Image (cartoon, rainbow, N blue to C red; front, side, top):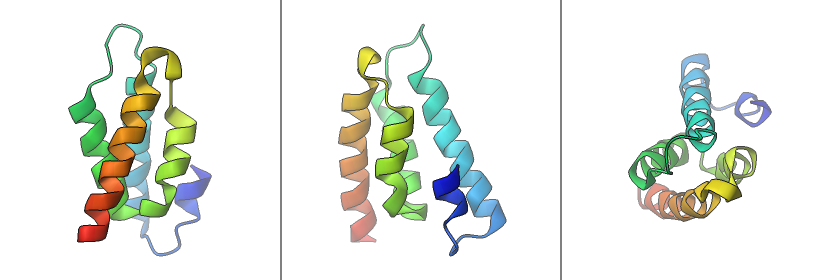
Length: 88
């Protein structure tokens, strides 16, 4: 949340959207009844990378769940999202 609030280049609506994306990732990572969904994670990482690419590492650190395999997929998705964001 703090990393999002520090993004002075984003308006309030965009910050809210970004926080929602991060919360969805967090909820997905903590879901005990569902395996990690790579497409779901990738879409959120891509969106976060377009809005604020510099906080992807913070997102990974705060929502990662190594037990469920989420961390591995999230890292992979974040790397791909960074590459895609640089191409825009």
